[in-house]
Length: 275
Length: 345
Image 1 (cartoon, each protein chain N blue to C red):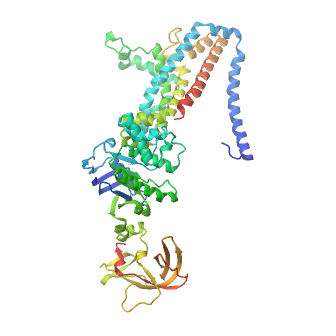
Image 2 (cartoon, helix red, strand yellow):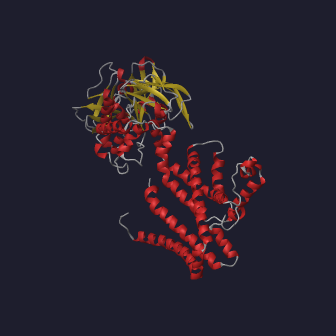
Image 3 (tube, each protein chain N blue to C red):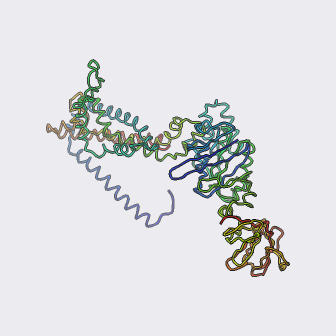
């Protein structure tokens, strides 16, 4: 924007950047406080520890899988909520937001009760040889993905719905008259135009999934080498008094998240966010 | 080519009320009506984007009432054109051909042909963002024509254009339609625009097709006072009809050839009134005297407004060559009883 600017522009700019500066400074100060608290020994211990690398890898792959599954649901659910009015629309629309509101711990308790106290949950986890589905979630890495999905899918669905809402319905109508099937119209018109919003939802979903902690403590536990992720490593280390190591792992988690989010925004933003 | 019988449709609180319409092969039909009268809903019904509650739609002799939009053989250009913003001009034009799995060599030929017909070959590599309103309109038309439709449906195709270019674009639309041989329904709310392009016109009001005919039919024989008002028939007054075709409008007595009784509306087309200065002859009907309150050249004609009584302002269109009367001059107006239209108020 290159319009002529006056004194009120400068005043508005100063006010806006005062808040931007305060917010950024607050975040930097908090991170710096952690960084100043730890010493080289703690950093070396963290970077050389197998259990940290193991937890980092598990944090990464589980959050990526949870995000992929969330997006798999987000596109059809978001499109249905955006384009169709059906009985229970309001209920489903509200249910989508529910996990954003309730404490993460509740998700863990609910999953535990479902898989251990209901016939359906027990049948899902029962081995195939016993007539079950053989899908083990509780106290297993797959359970981490499930917890992450439950708590973060809302972001993906909400973003996808908003993105589809933004696509002019007449574009789909014209595509239908030009020879597209409804599937073709979705894939060739709506999805490409909504992809920026869907990707933004994916970023939010991954960010939420990557740092999740509360429900994991209850539903999958903190078994080193099996269900440990970075957030639970922090909890384990600080609970036995290794505050420096816990903070070094926290900084590692923050660093990985920062790099990942900025990379997605820089690379993905150019190619995807602008339809 | 297009036959609609008793088409009824409900969209939210709006209802399309039993539309009957026939548009011949190669005919340019203009659907007129005020905003909210149901023109767009009717087009959407023809496209298959709205399902009929009852009635039947035939295109080219085929019953398409229950056919999906893609199987109807129509080219649809909605208001604001609805171009795909994520695709180039060429990709927009080719969109329907790709959807119909037309081989790429044939597709390229048809895109080039459609672009050539609309004079937009130089735009083919451009993105949609940054095109002017006129360029967007041409791209949307090329996209609709590329699939070689049996019927073209244009929803307010020139409403986004400036006043100066509307007329030339309308004439070009007519040329394009003749070249394609498709039947065309053009929706608009401007009678002058409709008169310029339409072989035949139809007027919609409150979800019903009220009257169809040539522009002359509609203008000279509007169905009722509301239609006359919408078509700006001019000189529309309310009065009381008496025996012998006499209508009393305020202090004036106007003679018509229509036998009516009670409250009526009368309209006297401005171009059927003759301006003169001589007094009324014995027994001569429809001779009014008044004072000139407006005299203004309007290109092909001049508009003269004459106050013929308290609150009774009569407009006259003088054809070229005309001599404009002076303001405040006393003049005499004459018009034959056959020129007086009488309808329900």
